[in-house]
Image 1 (cartoon, rainbow, N blue to C red):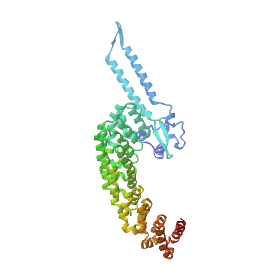
Image 2: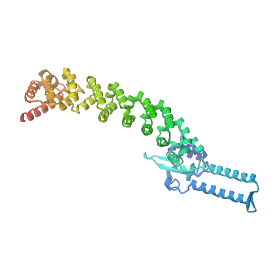
Image 3: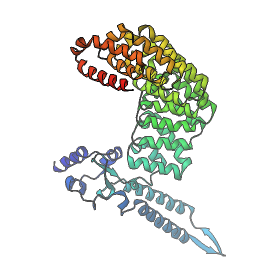
Image 4: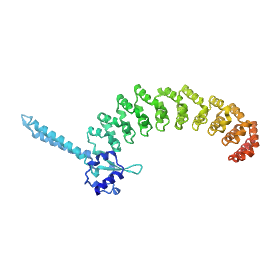
Length: 468
């Protein structure tokens, strides 16, 4: 029971890798591993990978070389020297020796699977957890059939994933030939894995057009889920670098198109859209049309609004940009009162384009008092006052300075901010009219929660402007 308890302790108290779980049943239960106090492990028994003293690869290589030397000696014995020619004494015996040699190689591989404490590595992770892993030397000399059949658990292990990436570099043809079929059934999960995603990114380098097309079609049903994932979005962005033909580009955009708006609204997947518009400018017009058709949905979404601002900043086609701006301005009255949508109007006003400013003023002027008091719209009115040209500014202030509007705004908590902004840009006559209206309402204003603070600012601005 004591040995069993320690097995459970090792298995559950220390986070283990999938490859270790595969090899765990192969570990001899009488092994010293189960007699270790896991809290008192020292680095000599579990060295880091750079400090490993026993190299299984060299060990096996020596054994194989020694057996091959024995075969040569045995062959020489079976030859008799006749007239300076070598003749086989018995071909049957030679085949028997060679078959025995193959059996020895198989036995060597079996021996490699007998895990001892020397073959295990403790790795400290960033989150202060300790991961128990198997030294990759254990399976370094395994066949491609073995590696491909265990590809899933190897890729989900940090060291196993690195080992398979080395295989891609060293023996590209065989690695792609064996690993790709094993990769396909679990590719959706592996793309989103913290370790396996690096292998998938790496294998793209060695795939041809047909193989990349196959992968794209397989992940199509789960494309949105993959793009939203923290690791998946990196894989998709890397994949885009290898869409070198029109066929692959069009296939990719066909998948992107139905979920375009969903990708914009997610933190990770937004970067895919940015890269799409940067790397494939041929899809700019189609993307612009999708954005225009969903302008309210995008503008009133937190991440969608941020995307729209960036999109406008790197849009190089003036016609496309004008069409998009016109689409935003058509929905001005909806966006100006929206908690998120008002920011895109403020961004447009920062261009200080007189046509954009005039368009917004013409839409809000009939209900200027309402918008000046509105919690979100008053921020847009402030930006209109700041970024409009002199003529637009004076015309707008003249309307706001009317007695009935100032009286209404002075008693509203949001409206008083607009009055303060107007006083900074008003001419002398407008300023006197506004101050006279406020003085007549002084008693009522003092009764408001914001009243005293507002009157203090008014008095300061009045004195400051009079001095001018």
